Image (tube, rainbow, N blue to C red; front, side):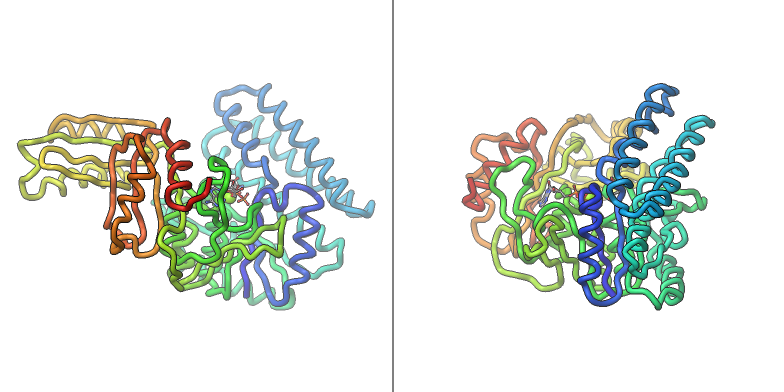
Length: 440
Ligand code: ADP
Ligand code: ASP
Ligand code: MG
């Protein structure tokens, strides 16, 4: 069985939705199809939710009305027959009545999460009826029946698998099973989600849960590129990546994949293929256990990083000092990305400032603290970087005069991480593209 995920742009226009239906019909075998919301929908739902939390009814109502117009046009182009246009209209009316109901009630964080989930629910329902109109046998599989996260917001892979397998068995008579990406239930059984971009994660979790043959992630670009195409002009797709390499790139900011996507697939060695809906023939990227040659493979960057320096000449060399420092982060449920130490200070980076004040307050017991916000981690990924000669020289030579705040090297075979101020990010990515890949 294949798991095939289509992102927002791949379903964002009626003709694209029709195209992916054709693509699925042309792909032999059984498939679980994971869909995102139509492009722009989740962003709009976030704006509606923000208005409502701030009790700005007018703003919310305007956004709802505009979104409804968009969906009304969409269904009229998606469906051809009057009968299906009527079905489409019924679906749109039902969802928008719900939005207005949510807006009229006591709007809290829970209603917010319920609102965010509607994007994927509506896109899958519209797509399912498009398949029906084309007389293609398919089933709708509600993600809220099997996808769950625990009290730490971690997906419950074993439980997902236990719930999913028997449901799929009941659907053995069809080749296309359509489900929602992104959405799930939390430990209180409330509607929740896997964070922005989470549909990739859904696909990987399903792929791991059913030990799929392959997980395909269809998007608007021909695979993982060697650098961020939104910032660097000349980038090239990478044909093959190992799970470790892809995992580092996703975690450190390559937007094409949700940061955790690779983890479940890697656990059960299910290959992940990245494909381009706009150019089906392009090879894309194959992510698997197989390593490939090539020194530098790709660069990714992760913003909104905070660096914390703890200066303590008195305590740094004492036994157990680092443990005490790390315990502060553990207690405050904040994970550390980079670490660097010297005789008088230790610097760490975090990507979540939720508990920053509490962390700083506790760390002040150990010494003086400096906090730098708006930093960016640039992650250079490649094959056996740690045992090749002179790799750091290439990196430093490429970066020229860009000030580097921290460096992490040797932690794994395939990663060099560098911390720079956010203001230097774009220039640094371009310089590395030229220096490491000869692309200008
Ligand atoms: P989808 O809606 O299909 O999930 P996303 O917008 O989340 O698509 O991801 C695809 C986008 O990721 C591309 O259009 C591209 O701009 C961006 N991107 C960032 N870094 C990379 C990279 N290294 N390789 C490919 N795409 C990247
Ligand atoms: N629709 C969600 C988002 O925009 C999930 C996804 O597209 O992957 O974040
Ligand atoms: Mg995405």
